[in-house]
Image 1 (cartoon, helix red, strand yellow):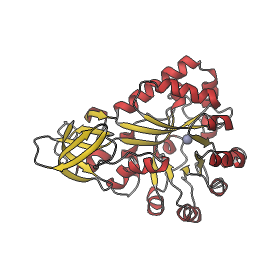
Image 2 (cartoon, protein in one colour):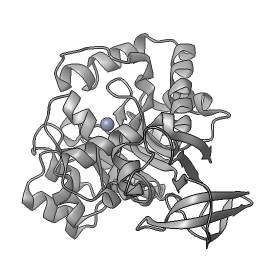
Image 3 (tube, rainbow, N blue to C red):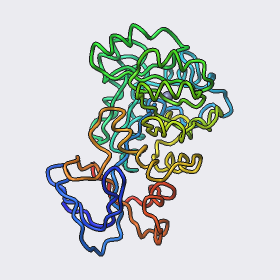
Length: 337
Ligand SMILES: [Zn+2]
């Protein structure tokens, strides 16, 4: 298979006119050559933080505080999840995953509520869908053993030391929310030596220093933070010191579209379009230990082809800026996963 057009090549997304040669699911070569194609070929996205389980609760709870919305165990989200049948859960999650695939997402890092049954429900929803998922179980140690690791709510919600240790022993990923509504739970979260943090909206300079010292990646979710009215994450300060990846967080609050998340991240912060595209692709892959997120020879062929001559994108002077700040589902021509 050959894909032609403007190729956003490597970790720097250098625009190259040419073709991507794909064989056996891998990029065999990226060749510079003249082409008639106005397509833009970029890596498919990695959504570094999702709660797809709350697809049954879209747009519920307008105006509620963060705690009333999502805090365990009795926030609105958790009550709606408990009230939904397994069939409703599977069907709703499946639709979200299909939407993610259609909008160019190759993989997501999913915090999956509901213990072991929650992990199994997610697996059922993902059957036949090509979006890879790193699933982090929640609530019980068994959920960690049944999945790819453990996704903790936040250091103020309980003592996670034991499950953190068990997750390390199992050689799995441990992620934790931190600094979402204030800075009080950040140091305790870092003390757990997690594999990554989520949010860090209120991180202090000292805490960002600690993150840099331990090379701790951070998943930021700016749209979620706007919906819950907790502030705007310090994307530039974090990105200067560590790996920052982009996530869409709760489907309850936001559509899991990486196009929308990139646009918000780019326009709310003063980092380059290349940095934002890295956050939406290879940095998310690095955070979760996945091998994807770049277009280069030898990489898995997880690719997104956009119509660079759509009415939306046609004539754009800077293809990376156009993808990050302007592109959307209507510009998607093909998703190769
Ligand atoms: Zn979250």
